[in-house]
Each structure stands twice: as C-alpha cells, then as structure tokens.
Amino acid sequence: MQHVTIIGFRKVLGTSLTIPMEMLNAADLMQRIQGGNHRKLQLQLVHPAGGNIVLTAGLELVCKHTLADVKHTDLIIVPALWGNPKGVARQYPQLLEWLQQHADTPVCAVGTGSYFLAEAGLLDNKVATTHWYYFDQFAATYPQVILQRDRFITRAGNIYCAGSVNSVRDVMLHFIEQHYGQAIASEVSRHFTHELKRTYTQSFLNQRPQHYHEDESVIEIQDWLHNAYHEPLTLEAIAASHKLSVRTLTRRFKRATGRSPMQYLQQVRLDNAKELLRNSNLGIAEIAFSTGYGDSSQFAVQFRKHMKSSPSAYRELVRKKLFQVNREGGAEDSVPD
Image 1 (cartoon, rainbow, N blue to C red):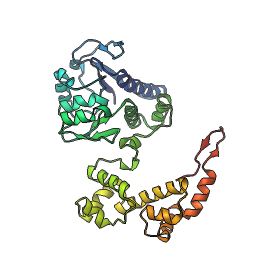
Image 2: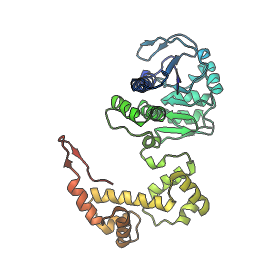
Image 3: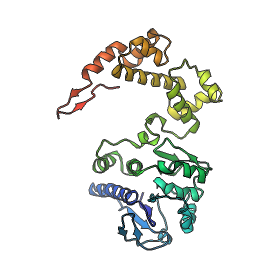
Image 4: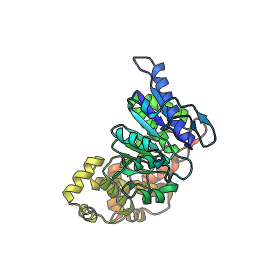
C-alpha cells in the first residue's frame, strides 16, 4: 500500500477523516523508523469539486488535490457527513463517477459515507452498514443494498463499511496489520485507543468473533444457533430450518467456520454453561437443562471432555480466582476460558 486517497467535502465529520489519516501516517512513520527499503506512504486529501475542505466545526483543511490528480490509488476512504446525508451524495456526480471508475480499488466508507457508495451503485446486492441513526432512511433510499443493522463493520469483497468513527479504527488497524505487520499494528493501537485493541476479526460482526467470514447463510445459521442452543437440536433439524440439505449445510458451515454445525453448537452451549457456572447460583442439573443438554450426566461428560474439569470443579476454581489481584493492584479474571 503506497497511495491512499481520502475524500473530503462540505460538512464532513472531521474525526472520520483525520483519524484514518493519522493512524496510517503513524504506521508508515514507525515502519520507516525501523529502516529497510520502504517508500513513504502518499496520503492524498481530495475535494471532488476542488478547493479547501470545511469541517463541521468551521475548521478548514487545505486541499491541494482534485479527483483528476489521482492517477493511481491503493485505498480510498470516504468519511462521514455531519447531519442528515439524504440527497447529499447526488450533489457530487463527479465523485460518484470516479468511484465507479475505481470499483476495483479497496474502499472504506465511514458512517454515512456509505451513502456515496450506495448512490454510485457499488453496494447493489451487497452487505453494508451505516450510522445507526439513519438505518431506516438508508434502507428506504437504497432497498437494493443488504443493510446489516447489527454490525459495526461489513465487508463485501473490497468494500468495507464502518458504522462509526470507533469502528473505522478497527478497520484501519486491520489494513495496518495487513501491510505493516502485527507489531506495528499493536503499537498504533496503543497510541490511538485507550483500551486493549479489539481485532478487526472481533469487530467485524458485532460481538461474535467466530462469525468472521463472508457466507451470509452461515452467519444467519450461527445467529440462529446462538438463540436456539437450549433446544434439543439435531443436524437434520438445523438443515431443515434453513432449507438446506444436511450435506450442503455441513460443507458450507465447515468451509466458513472450520467446524461442523454440531461442533459449533457444542461450543455455544459450553460457553453459555461456563457463564452460568461463573455468575449464577443455578444447580448443575438446571444449567444442563437450560443449555440444551438432555441431562446432567451428558452435560458433565461433554464439559469434562472439552474443559478437562467437571462443572462443579470449574465453578469452584473460577470463583476462587475471579478477582485475583494482579501485581499492579488491579483486579482481573485470571481464569482462562
């Protein structure tokens, strides 16, 4: 990645433009400090109609480039608008045409920046997200787009949508890790976030990192399993509920997740069982029943197989160590899952 084009326009949300710039620039600087044969990253701030970029707070950014100046780019960033984005994208036909011409280039839209991609037709029949406040408006304006209301980040091929400025940090860290390596990505994360970095994988689909893939049908099944794990499910029942053959379900699920549907279900049940063992006073038999196991003995066999411990022993251990004080005087959950 040598050239990044960041689009600016009137009433752009400043942080959605500057945060990606600063993070990418920091990564590039760290790479050059380490030495080696590394060409400096070229960040081009571009105004579709020419002229400087006025941010929502009245600050003005000097913009030396127009769309015509961009001969080649490796990444396009479309920041968010401040306020209602309806109809704004149509005011920049030259930008929409330019985006269409660069459809093969990776692009990341921040928040309502996804309106520009949708207006250009780049999101037709593809998953996308936008700022939560405009979900209904976006869905009504662009019914051909598969809006994902429960995701912070979506990816459709080379098109990334981040629902907020916080989410775009995760996307930028993903790009940085891809092009500069994990060590530099971790260092950039330390400087730009006050908490431990959530990986792009974890942020990709809301709170469920195991969803990281692009098979929409399998994602739907995973969500369904997270809601139905307490029922006495069979492979045949899962396939029938989603109008798939057992063979097709198994093949697609394993290709997407690396596990069979029943292995995945087993993990979901165990994760929920561990949560109840840690944080509830339910008896072992009650936990077994509430997590989809036929009886406590079946639950105990599966729990011991995967956790190398009985449910009762796990509960005792985790409660003893739950608030173990670390060397710095803080409290941490030191019991691994």
